[in-house]
Length: 506
Image (cartoon, rainbow, N blue to C red; front, side):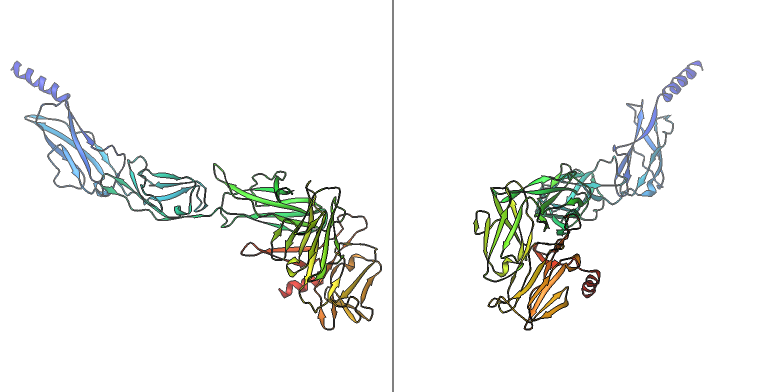
């Protein structure tokens, strides 16, 4: 009797030290629908025994009797608590602690870009990343469908360094774990273009001395992330080009515009843009110019004969003046082309045998970076039509001025009609319009008409006696076309009535 109780006591002590536990064969912290998993019942302390197993589990009427519980294509209904216990001969372990199995639906993967720009340029760097929401910590490998991947990566991201146009295209990904595959992500399309050249615009193009000038820098296919850099163009006569000098506070501005206060003289400007880390920079824009007819600048330009309009094949001399030894004459033509030198330069004088292509804005630049006043020159293409003879530079208030009309074959005409801002102001046999004391009201567009033919119209500017901000200049506007060419046309500082009439007709 005592011996039996002793044997029972030993069995009870041994039974206490034998424990059953349910473990997941995989190290995954999350289980997704469609995967195949294996649960294992481990009996600790029962080594050497032959065990039979019992399971309690959700969603099953016939649980297995082996140590492994394999579930193929697991679904949400398999979520719940799993327990097991073992028996050997007359020994029976207790039920294991519950193993909580949670089965969820993996989110559809998403391809993201860092930075998030889908429009990038040759030379930029971008990281493509595959993200599976709710799949954090899962031991995924990744499959990619991508534009230019001979050996696609198996990680969730890869870096495109110095992108080229061949990197353009669609990118999608999916996750894989053993034999389980997630859905394919939606396609994100990356577009890689040639290095952009920003376009700079200036307003106004012609200014009154002391006015504010606004620069605007625009990148092709505008997108986020750009910073802008602003420069003044400094003439470099030895290279027939310009160097660029950063404007004050003009480094990496967030705004795509820059305002220059108190501009008085002709000057050239350029811009460029940058973004990313490391920062990618575009090329510099083509230079754009702000022109002033201010004749009191450190340098000046004179035209001989002193008139805006000329006939084809006329001989015209442009002379640069100032305390400088080296000069070049620059020309901004009607079709938007910028010319950096004169074909026939003798000393400080440029000689032109005029053609229609010489209709342009002209100014002088010195080797020390000085700009002269600028002038408009118009070449008459109609050999039989008249031209208006008017001064190229502003006329001072109170001074006298004489406007006349001329044919190629006859310099002095009578019975001429003169128009000021399209309004007939004189018709007499003298053929000359004389203003004895010029006032601000005389500023504007003038043209003449002879024998039914009209000249082109030219702007006559009137400056104040004290040469302050009230001085006026020709106002021109530059329109940029699709091929980056520009069309320059004389615009008006007209009386309000005339401007309203013009706007109404557009």
